[in-house]
Length: 509
Image (cartoon, rainbow, N blue to C red; front, side, top):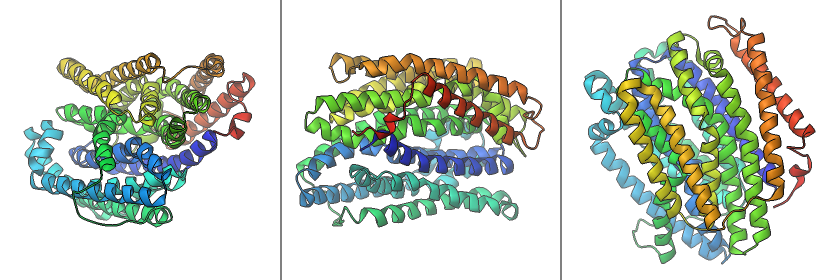
């Protein structure tokens, strides 16, 4: 396997999905802005979408791929039996969970958005919409199971392409929004669940080549499957800690009008880079890393780990600098239309700035956690993530009354850096990771290249400040132009400084 090529394939479809996600969100911003309809829909959408990210973006893989890879080495019969038992038990657990939540939906939404309790209309709307969107959890989790099997065979493109379906369906609904009026949020909610069904069918079509499902509704499973499910819960919590922190932020933000929407739009921007710099790399390295650990190939293990961390830094650091330099212009150019006014731009930009401070940490958590998961250790990252979430909650609650929703991205970034540092220290202590000379040499070159890129990007924003003004129609064009120029400059400087070399693309792992 070639790490860069595999990451590139995964990233390509992920970028397509995120671009369509941006088009979806700009349409939502135009027609809903940061109104109470938007707040209610984002709560209803945040819940299944958080689970989508928890399951689909590498977290389910964290427990499944190492276990499944071990079974694959024993032969197709045993791997198929293991996978079928996992699917059947997962289906039963999720079905029961969805039914219970549907029955107790008012209490569930009250936990997720307690600030809505003061507004009966907003609360009832959020309950109705969440009832519609919640079955998406069942469908996307099972679809993610199929993704895990495909990834185990180094088939990454199909899993990365599946989320495109959700964005396409929502865009189609939004294009007919003028005739839907206030019912738009209901149609969007139905579209979410329908898209989950389509993703399930789409991935099943590809996974049939590797997996023959033996459907059986029974709680009786083998010892290996029981061990897997014991690993699953901590892996979901630890690998998905960034999403859990964001969900915690949504709960706290519900006490301030429009704050849920501000955080949502900021979240959409930095998630584009995180999907590549953390999620894509984590998903791609896990199958190969797991196999080399089983074979005890220390040389390959060190090579993959260092290259993964290097690639994550190479992608996340310049994005961090760009978001810090141009947060206001970025939010304005991407979402500052229609109902999304200057106040909305300012508040979302502030949230984006503080989220950006934690972007490298968000990416490193994904990479470092996979070093543990490949060794079939899900408990250690779980305990660290639990401490991180508690730290996030403590900071957010303590300062929320005095400075408002902006403490949420600040707390998320602080707790994520805490998580990253502790993961790294334990990896070093257990001798599960060591820097090689190539990484140490390129680290400083990546930092310098990113600083040069940031300076150019800042200059471009000043150069185009009139064209990027809030009331300009084509401001998004000038933002994209600035980003493309800065990105090309970064790659060019990185190549000159040998922070990146063409030989890396050909390197096999």
